[in-house]
Length: 235
Image (cartoon, rainbow, N blue to C red; front, side, top):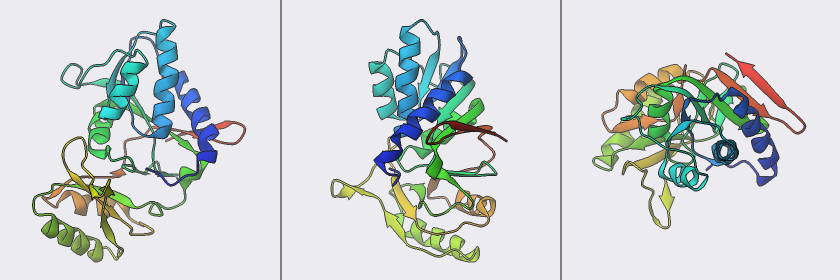
């Protein structure tokens, strides 16, 4: 998960609450993963219990469990392959609306759901808005098969772009972390990423890479929770 302090939770709640203004009755909604997105799911659940009619498509099993507990009707992309809106968090977002996501390990499903949506609204606390992506390690979801070869290919591709830094296999409970899809995650500490588009293209060309955490040209609105208010940014 993101390294942001718990003290920013009020900003996350403020951003999540403001995102409810984007929701209309009858919508098919992608429901994001992570702390800020889960605040949104809880607030959305209260609206549903008050009579709001929506259907949610969760981006992770954890989000699905939370949404069910909140009484939100759920479906899949097989049921509704085109969604009206996805509301999700981010680990970083720059002023060009480029994101790093995947700190919680749900990046593949998050990207599939966001890509199926007419609009994506990103909700973050103020610390997630950055000038240049890369302080947060970039999650790269990889197949367990051929992990060593995939790691080498990632290092080589990054090196061609002038990027260096450690690739760390994510561990949880003393075992390699497994995504909902059964994949591993390599967290890449590249530092500043001056050309996210070039890195995205290079990573996507590697067969063992299932997906990466660069979300480009996907978000249309960013809602930034601040100490006393929210800032709404539109691409």
